Length: 216
Ligand code: PRP
Image (cartoon, rainbow, N blue to C red; front, side, top):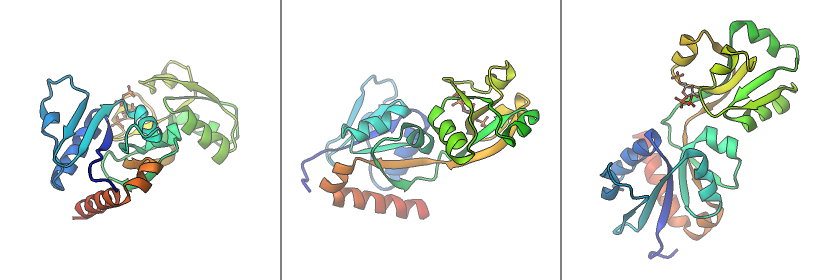
């Protein structure tokens, strides 16, 4: 372990990053530079603790961590499953809880029972493919969308969608429902495998402190 080395964190931009910094603050890790919301800076440093933080789009977090550009990443489990990068998942942070589900109109329920070749729209084509092909053994056509996925069945682009459900209000307001649950989701901490070896003590200590704080 070298004490001079900076430990670099990649955080998924937005609510997740805010929640993460709130949690870190509770274990004494702060980053004053990050609090200036008008700043256009991309990298924030805590010189004293030898920590660096940067914000990126969620799906890029596992990429930075796999290549070692960040030692540690904080990102949703949905992104980890979709990106399927070579990283260690070390901690469930508990926030950002939601579910990955197959959703659609009630009338689509029976399409899921008989191995029919249906159309599935999703922002998460890999998760959708794994679920339908590997788990359900149902051949489907997957259509990649980039957002507002609930539109899929409404405009007859697809029969169902695979998407995140948090409160369920987007579904409800659009006459759709959860047909099947794929998996539960929440924010996770991921670590680069080489960093895990090089910085074992620092990373283990951080994980232990976070774990204790989360169960407090
Ligand atoms: C997410 C998700 C759903 C919605 C679920 O979309 O894709 O559309 O939130 O939340 P709810 O169950 O609380 O209604 P997001 O707001 O991230 O935007 P997007 O549709 O552009 O992906």
